[in-house]
Figure 1 (tube, rainbow, N blue to C red):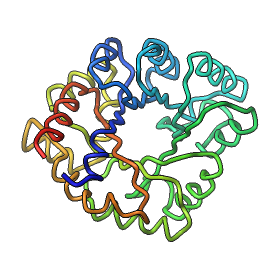
Figure 2 (figure 1 turned 45 degrees about the vertical axis):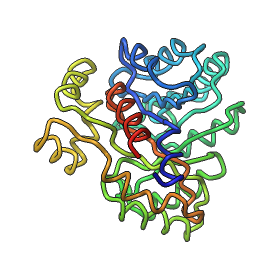
Figure 3 (figure 1 turned 90 degrees about the vertical axis):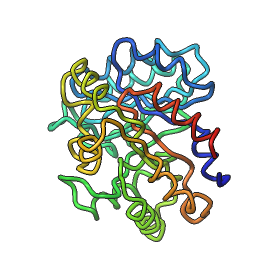
Figure 4 (figure 1 turned 60 degrees about the vertical axis):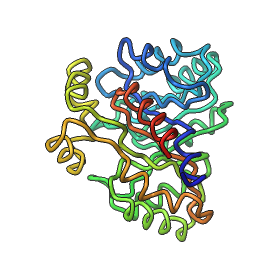
Length: 274
């Protein structure tokens, strides 16, 4: 296995949806794993913060998502920062959020990043979202401009899930030429089982766990043709580019849809077999 690929697979960064009982699966993760905890539009910020508290004390890097459009105001933001700081959290991820209208004063991730900087914090790492295949309501130039502005407040970005390695690499090269220097984490689908995905959807209200699946026709097609999906082909297509210093790809960010144990098994199989 290419050294860059092994590094990216070993350094696990897994996204999960905060539901009751998910911590039992997460305890199977290797020490030092990064766990991104999403901010569910249906369950709200409290579910994210509660899971953070249940996982604190374990040897993980916990990265709660603070969705800007779900935060009411600066006062609530201060409370969130204090709550996370009290738990020893050193990293956060700041997306805009999937809700159709902001609940308060923050209409975008950039607006809340500025507020975070103004109130002060001790976070060592702040991640932001990036969109290689665009956004349904924001034009590509606006997305690029926002990403450039976020660099003053963030330490890395994660790409939204994409199934085309060529698209990903071309897009990363484009933003590098445009002045974006933040390290990149490439968002990939994890190992998916159709039946498990549907069960997860029922637990949290249909939408949260299948939102990406419905927007990504390639994933939907894979799950129609087969009950399982593995990201092997995509990972190997990206492998030759991982050592390219001009791209600055730090690792893979796996959208697990809460299929944590299957993703761990896939990782261990990849490391053992190549």
